[in-house]
Structure formats: C-alpha cells, structure tokens
Length: 194
Length: 194
DNA sequence: ACCATATGAGACACTGATGTCTCATATGGG
DNA sequence: CCCATATGAGACATCAGTGTCTCATATGGT
Image (spheres, rainbow over the protein chains, first blue to last red):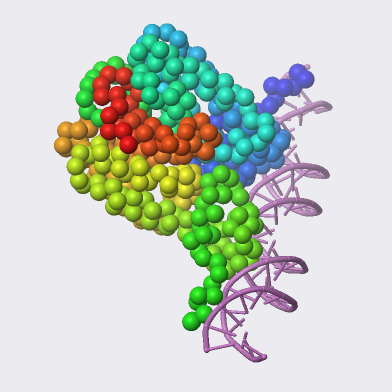
C-alpha cells in the first residue's frame, strides 16, 4: 500500500464541497455532489458507499468540528457568558453544515443515532448549567432548552447569512447577544464585542 | 353540483393529519400520508394533484394560520413586548407545521415562492421595528434578524416539545423569555407570565 | 519504459415513489 | 328504488435516483 499517496481525491475536500452544496440544496443528487467536488459519480461511490454513508460522514465531520470548537472555547474557564461567546465564534464555520444535518431529521429517528450528538448536548447543557449555578444565567430557562435554542439560533443565523439577510460578520454578535441578552433593551447593550 | 356535500373527505382533516405526520417524518410517502388521514391513496390524489400540490396546500394553510395569529395578536397595540408574547401564544399551534415547512427549503429556491412569506416577514419586521422605535427593544439587533430568530426559536421549540425535552406548557414562556430577555440574569426575570 | 493504481465515462439493472387508470362498491339525495 | 357521485383497491407505466459493473485512460512511482 505504498501507493496510497496516489489517491488524488482527498476525502476532506469532497466532504467540504458536499457540505457546501447540501447546505444550499438538501435534496441534491449524488451526481450533483460529485460534480460539485469536481469528481465523477463513480469515484464518489468509491469513497462513500452510498448517499447514506456520505451523510453519515458529514455527520461525523460536523460532530468532530463541534467538539473541537467546544474544546477550543474552554467552556469551563471564566464567566459562562464569555465561554458561550467563544463557543459561538468557534462554531461559526460549522454552522451551515449543522443546519443541514439539523433538518435531516432522519438521522435521529433511527434506533442507533450517532452518540456524538448526545455528548455534545451534554457538554452544552453543562455549560449552561454552570452559568446558572454561578448566578450568571437565569434559572427559569432550563439548560436543555438553552441548548436547543442555541442550535436553532445557529441554524437560523446560517440561513440568514446565506440568504443575505444578515451580514456574515455579524453572525456571532447577533446570536450571542440574542441568546444571552435578548431583544429587550434594559441593560449592558454591547460590550465584549470581538 | 348539489352533490358537493357528498364529499365525505374534508380537505381540512386531510391537511391536518398530513401536517401532523410530515412534522414527524418529513420524508413520509404519499401512501403513508393517505393512510394517516384514513383515506386511500387514490382519494388523496383526487384532492391534491401530487406531493408538490400537497406541500403547497400545507404552505398556504400555514401562512393563513400565521396571518390569523398575527391578526389576533394585535401587533400594533400596546407594548411591543406584549404583542410578541401574544403572537407566540397564538402561533404555537402552527409551530410544528412551520418547522416542517421551514426545513422544506425547496419552497424558497423556486422562482415564484409564495408571497405570503414575505408578507409575514414584513409584518413581523414591522413589529420589531416598532419596538425599537418605542425604545423597548435594543437597536443593535436588526428587525430582520429578530424575525429570523423568532422563526428559529419557534421551530426549535416545536422540536424540543416533540422530543419531550421541553414541556408543552412551557413552549410560549421559553420562547418569549429567551427572545426578549435572553439567558443572562440581570433584570426583570419573570413577570408577564401567562 | 513499465506497471500498479485511481479515475472518468458510460451502460445496466434495480428500487421506490409517483401519477394514472379501471372497476367494483358504498353512500346519499331525488 | 334509481342514479349520480365519491371512495377503495389494485394494476400499471413511468421516472429519478441509486448502486454496480466494465473498460479505456491518466497518473505517478520505480
């Protein structure tokens, strides 16, 4: 297997372009995915057994990215609010892919869904819980709901940016400010801007 | 056409059960949709030319419901925050259907998408803008983003309830409080509870 | 130059869903 | 009772996407 380097098509690039395409049109065909990656359908099939395998690979990629973002955000350090801010900033590049997978609800109805999601949920939930216990966050919104809401805002944000309704540079700010501060005008409007 | 009353299958019921099913499994087949409504596939086809027509009908239904909810919420009366609260409460029964259509992004990529959505967007945007001009809402989050975020939170909320992660009775409270007040604990924690 | 491997192009069968049709039956008004 | 209509069941062709295969060609080490 010294010839492994002959593999001109790198899996990473294929997954990237597939993510970019499926984010826009979630019903794109395998042929379109292949062409978007600049390869033939046959080659695509050689790397990913089928559409299902491709989506699973994207799922794994997204989970890995989200976990990496979570690691980089150091969720256990400093004020929870700032940790959330770091997290959103770190997860932004993965938001579009997350939005695609979020709408692929068939991923979660099977008997054996990727346990990576529940691990992510737990870590996010823990972050919000920490914020509650430290007195930073209100306690009448459950950590589970805050986690779910974060997912929702990330997907909405990705969509809004893709549609041109929100400037890409405002992505993090809009999400963090809404998630933490809400729309009501009462206190600490800005600050901790990047 | 005196025999119109012979129509045993009422369109409304079919749309309702289709919405309920597609909300859970967005890839449900026409046969499943028919069976869920208690009719045969042939009859379903007699009422809706095809799957596309069915989704379009659901889209129209959802838009009508949302507009009715918006009307009932009296978005131009009283404080904008309370209007938002009334709106979310009124739109709650349609949230699941909204979530389904929201993920059906093919609806928005065609050249001629239902203009009802843009009308809804405009009315929601106007509500948030009114809140900003009255000094209730902060001005650094654009009305367009607040509108998009509301959609996102509604779909997340519907999903969370369906998954059992959030109690159905908390739906409105969780969404309104997060959208208006955010997660940060600083001021006016509860109040204006239903 | 040689050779192993990866790729592209295309053909092919298969599958699942869709849309259309027919016919028998049930329903309800006249 | 008669008849118009709606429905259910099923057959049927169609179609798009998928997965598999073959073969010719390109690529890049040796």
